Image 1 (cartoon, rainbow, N blue to C red):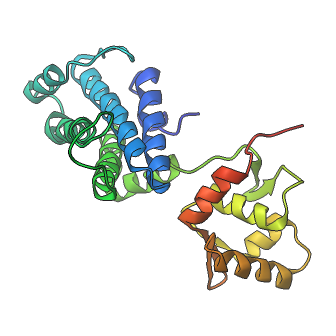
Image 2: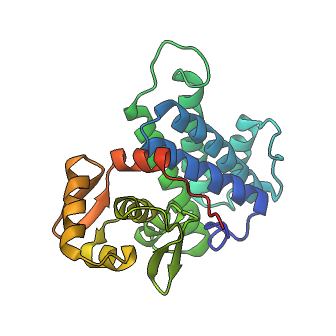
Length: 250
């Protein structure tokens, strides 16, 4: 199920699916350091946001794949005093800024200004705020709790990993212990995993040897291993996506 469905269930499925898909891709491209693709995904995310505003304003939305009338959507929402202030002002304006970064900062066409990490960081945090605010408005959730929901929404899902009773199990028996560690950490990224859990999940027989494997992964920069906990680095994230097949084979 789309993670946003439980929070934004008053919206049509097409709008929620577009919002979730582009939000997820924006995060994935950003954490891989792909600034230009992240802003392209940010622009598509902003288009989905404007459809949310349009639907909340008029109970209809411009069909996906059809060109938006951005100014008409923003102007109409501003005049609708029945809407929450953030839906009238902040959300449409932030979405507009995200679109401006895509259109005017050398994204999607040649231009004078290079795309960089600072631009993409703004787009990412603006998108996070928008989604958290939409969740808050729809559920009356506390803002801090809404931000916590963001972490769940962007959680990576790996088909070769199954969660059983709170315990992760790797369904690809051909992976060696280092690869299993990296895949488990990828699934939990950006959270850390404690050593005892990794020892259990990898089903390894010698904790001392596992610790040495983790030290090796730490030395080559794929994980950060300290205080008996392991966290995947961006280098590790890229390595997993380049080298591990997530497809479940029977």
